[in-house]
Amino acid sequence: MQARHLTRSRRSRRGFTLIELLVVISIIATLMSLLLPAIQNAREAARRTQCLNNQKNIALALTNWATAHNNQLPAYGYFIDNPATPGSLVHQRSWVVEILPYMDAQNIYDRWRMDWDLNVLDSDSGTAGNQNNLEEAVVNLPVLTCPDDQSAFNQDGGLSYVVNAGFGDGVGADPGVVDHNFNLEDLEWDAAAAADPSQFDQDITRATGVFWAEYAAYGANSKIGNKSARLGQIYDGGSNTLMIGENVFAGTDTTSGGRAEADGWASPQHKSCTFIAPVTLRTTPSLIGQDGASGIGYDAGAITTYSPFPNQSKNIGVEGKAPSLNSSHPGIVIVGYCDGSVSNLNENVDQGVYLRLMTPDGTRIRSAIGEETPLSGTDF
Image (cartoon, rainbow, N blue to C red):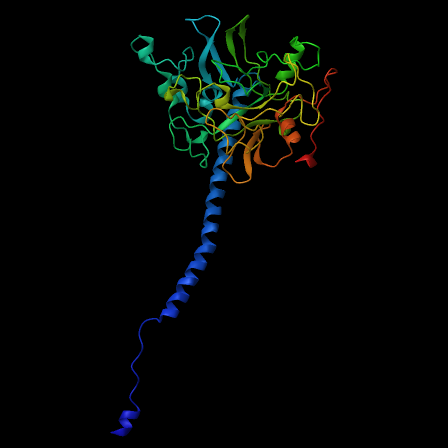
């Protein structure tokens, strides 16, 4: 009997002790802390890749449009004379509408009434059966939005991408119709004693940007056609000239009279669909001296409403009122160039280099004001 008692097996212990359980939990927590950043980085990389692809498709559409139009890029915005008040302009459409057929949106383009004011509703026209452009303008086109732009992604009429509209007066009150075009900016570039805007000054202003507006009947001018740049004639080089970029504050029209339907990719208002380098008038009258260190005529002295440089308005910008490059991608903004390439632009890029990237014709010699120095590969 005693032998059987000595050989009896012990009863197996079941479960974990408290210490063992805490060790397992701590191991799981450590693994999760290591995995979550990796997952977030992978998701951000995917969103960044999608944004790059979107801009590549838009750049291709813009270059294809230009190829079909004598190598000239579309105007950033199209404006028509207001029949009710001749001499004033009303919104018609943005550059996005022009390239719809090249972005697999021929159906929207064919339904668009090119002779209509964007802000006119059927009920306003009083004509039964008229097509309402605003019905088309609120269509969600994923190629036009960055996944990191929460105000545009998966939103009706969302727009995350803007085109390069050069230097100009962009810090004043919201415009009634259009206030940014090379021949509307009475800027004196040759340091004259008084403001005497001439064709020379207008040509210089035009040389600071790639896209300009097309409009009819503004003041003494009967019509100004499309004066955007021509591909193949970018004097500073297509790979050194910005064409498009991100702006998380794009797509809001602050001149639409409060109509939410007018917000979106169809608005031609420059604060909605472009990015610019605003100039500050240094003296009175409109006299702008040259600042060779920062690009043609640029002075950041009194700019307080937003910053013209990449990602510096993310915390101060307002929808529809910050026409500069702003991205939710950490540390970068994705941009496209006039040669059709796209890349990441560091948000800490030298300001002088950035401004030279905006100008398509800044290195051409102009005796009165000098010229920008060409960009070198080591500048980036």
